[in-house]
Image (cartoon, rainbow, N blue to C red; front, side, top):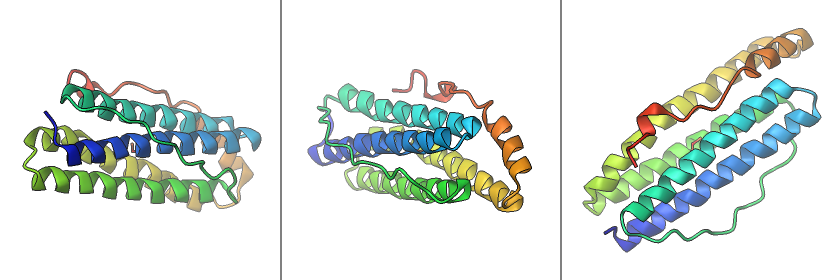
Length: 173
Ligand code: FEO
């Protein structure tokens, strides 16, 4: 049975992950309207990943005998100045999420909740990848600057991203 404090904090993370999905879907919509379907695809896949993260927390709360309580999801921004501005926002957002995951780990340790600490390990590793993915695209967009040809090629590249359920997550929760 999970402790009340940990249960509340994990419920907060369900909301944070769903907000992330909402934010990336809004970024997808921004790119769709800017005729960059590849960038939009990357964001749609990212939104799917965030929904997957939310459901991992959802399932875990239930598994531990807790109760999932859904809260209101904040409206995300809808406009950005450029593709670079979008990915800088992604990068900043993922750093914020990493801090939230780290706070959950701190709480699990403080509560001596070893099961939750172990469960969170997957997210600690996932955040390394999330920050790296966003950081690499920021770097590429800085390199290509305002070149429409390069942006077009990058759009083609990002159109290839597909959502796949992470193998390491199966059976774990
Ligand atoms: Fe759920 Fe992008 O971290």
